[in-house]
Length: 72
Image (tube, rainbow, N blue to C red):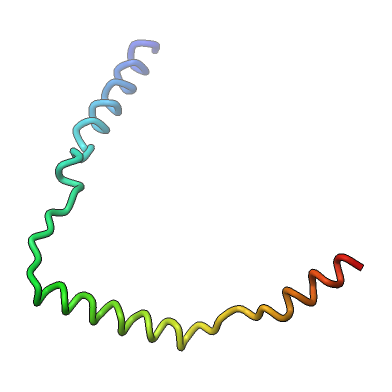
């Protein structure tokens, strides 16, 4: 029984080692140009603008009111 558990542990360890990605494969290689960078920046700006209009800023007055009540 002990040997079969050891074999199972070794098998899982080998599977994890074999399935791991190297650091080189995780690092994207950026070979952009000015057109690509401009398109990505424009897309970022559009998404940021839509996010700001869709998600309002959190209220600050209620937080100030809450802290005043807490100090009383």
